[in-house]
Image 1 (cartoon, rainbow, N blue to C red):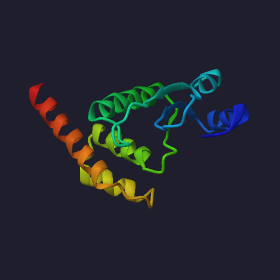
Image 2: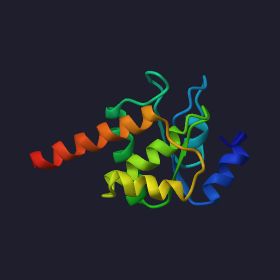
Image 3: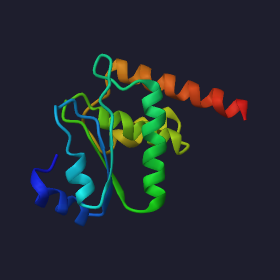
Length: 136
């Protein structure tokens, strides 16, 4: 994450209006992010270094809402587990992309593959979305 107040000012100057923090680091930059006029969401409760499928539903809804409000959303994960890429895929799926399409689009922007556990989580996410859509 950007260091200090000036780093967050630079992030905001690039059009970012919200930050999702997936890092497991102690301490929160939430106050600094909010002091720079950005919205902030932190997901820290994780099993095996992954968000829960319910958390994916929460974060994707939050990202969609922030995007509708205008501006970009920065998703940060300092753990090198690529959970930021996982969230990006989930947002694409929630926006209507198939899992294959979301993975393909992600492959065009990152050289970090998702793990088998992350792929299994995305399959759960898709399955729950299908069930929810059928229930409507």
